[in-house]
Image (cartoon, rainbow, N blue to C red; front, side, top):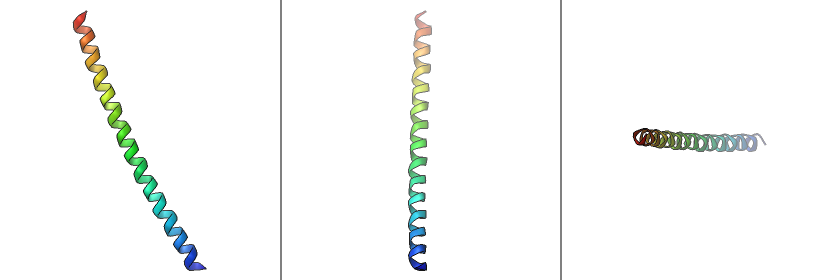
Length: 52
């Protein structure tokens, strides 16, 4: 019984670690997308300014 509980706990911890890693990857991807959007916005601002 104790072995089953330990195995279940190890599986839970492994799943949690996997989800945490996926979450971190998603955060990094969103940060990169945000940086790209900010860069595009800056370029658009520069283009608008040069046209005025």
